[in-house]
Figure 1 (cartoon, rainbow over the protein chains, first blue to last red):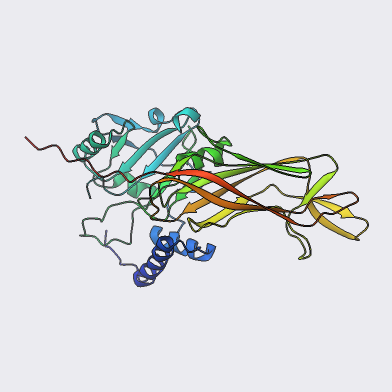
Figure 2 (figure 1 turned 135 degrees about the horizontal axis):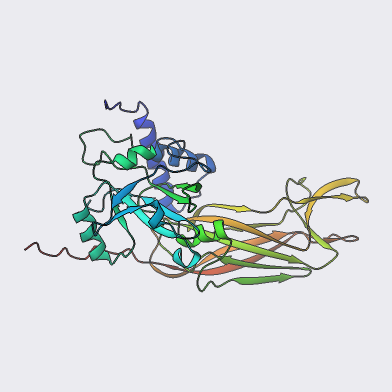
Length: 89
Length: 256
């Protein structure tokens, strides 16, 4: 896959800096700035399956090497699946 | 919190199983940390972080998103959060999706004339930068109502606002108000009567000193009966909240 650098990285960075400054200063964040910040962080809200859609099937090893998939991770009311960056840095 | 409400939890990253094992051991994490070393599942979800160029160490990480899915895999809600470290609190997920506040929640009950309102946070603890939930349970005596929105400027709608620099963003969702014809005024205005409940969210500042603190807010409303409208009222309140200290990573075990 050829990586295409988003053309709006500088703009995103500026939005994220302004959000960070307000968050640290305890200044209110407008709905517009909040939406722009989440959008910049996530490269559009539109990424990933939407509400009402099924998530893709998957099977991945857990920290103990046990293969896990949706069927055995979910409880009666569902599953909270958290995507995070590295646990190493 | 989630388990008690019948919701499983698992986390996905591009780390190797060894890194996840070491992380889980150091922090005492019991829930599954799933290893997706070539980011294949992250790509299949369509949430690869495309802000990060190929070749950088961080390339391959997903966007910071939490998916709440039903047991058949249907998305109930996705929480695109504002960065990797600060996720929505489990208590806010439970309150917003299942309508129950978790654990030992200290609610305040405000009483003023015909109205009483119970206000409480979704949980009593959070980290700085996290999103918390809150609920507001309104109860009016028979024959009385308060205004909803949208409302002409001369009246005061029922609202709860937190006037606290620890909160940088807030929202409260109330049920739809019922239109009521005010014969004497010749107007139709949105009102609430009886019992109704709102659920809201609060985004906390970062950083905040760890320890016990309070969140300050105000309830505003204008109580009216069939015959009389009282002046608008503002009732201040405080809710206790413990800001949790950030966990410093325990020392890594020396490799033999």
